[in-house]
Length: 585
Image (cartoon, rainbow, N blue to C red; front, side, top):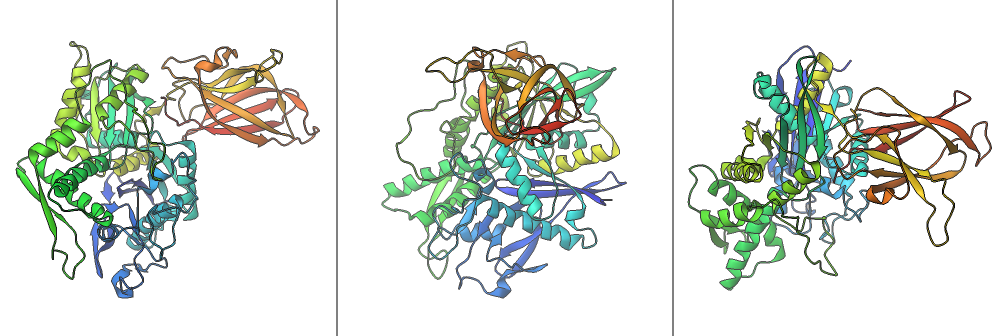
């Protein structure tokens, strides 16, 4: 039996680890040893999610020794990786997790860093993520030598909007290291952290409340909606909607300041090289945090790294003041919006550098409005999470913007968050604690209706694809981890031959009826999801035979829809699995 339950926030910009011991209620944060300078190791609450490949002559072997020894791979992870990457171009991989969702790049394709110098081997997003997770595993095993992480109950958090393939790839990275982890949505984990830190949470919520969770990290904005309901006189909680994957966060704000400073320097005749931009971005991040801090300075000096015997020899300096940061960050990313505003797309260039699928509209307020509109939501509470909200002016302004979108008679209260930088890891640990020891469970109701394509009885028509109806196999609100549901219909299933299964989801927030059939004329109103091609075992049947079946479905705790086809006249059955934790918009 596992001795510990462990929550890992495998973040885009930082990682954190919390744990609890069976039989105890206390949750503790793991301090993560990492290199902070050549030959210097410090244990810190957060591990920066950066992977750096040093030049062969850049570091001595003795410079890279960690408490568990020298890594067998030629990479560095953590704070030193981030610092060295700020001074060298083409050696650092960042945002590896976001690359798992790239629309045109496989997670196994070795393309990172995209600007790699000639003397390093590029790596895939999965490989980079595995380096980061390996460091966390090694840190745990060093601290708990008698309880290796492979033997513990582990929860790894992912964005609520993570694509199915990205979830699978995350699981595979963990499995490669011997960890069979449960995946959990990051905004939901943040809400669990609030529950863990709020013993009297029932007094702050009431039936009918809708809690909007806004999680703005370094690389993404993740949105979820949790409804407060009643069951046998007790309050119940259910996650009823999740937003789409939005590549927009604190890193974008730092880059906005970086280009502003770079333009100021250019006007002074000082042109920066590409490798200096990363270092300038880190300096601008520090300036942002300082200038937006309560009681912070009115002006901050920004130093651009140089290549000299001393870092500060011939260094280029500039300044940022509070008014500039307010204008670029607060007004630029959190502008006032009206109910008629739409997320802006704008024209795109014909050619673009290979990079992440960043959002073209930087206005986070417009993205939140779009989510509320699609979810038909009217939130009464809001919970902020993510390092961006360490800046109180950002939290205050966003709360003001959200309140302005609601009817005059609606009240939107802010729930006080747990620690903004490690709430997700703590919440994941508390979730596992409640599963083991009992306690309130937030129901993960599906955020959309899901359908499977059924060949229509209509005859083929020249010039048209064969018509397909859509069968509702998982209605909106269906709880993950609930009982298996049997559909009332019967169908024919082809076995022993490769066939395609098409999946669809609704684009509205009304629950459909399990087993309801939408005819081919109505399928166009649904959102089609990636199909699955399978060859189901023929067994006693001949390849290509059609067998008469009825269907049952169940969604497990990992968001996998398990659709089973049961032969009517025997005990044979076939299973089709599909991930339904997708965006509802």
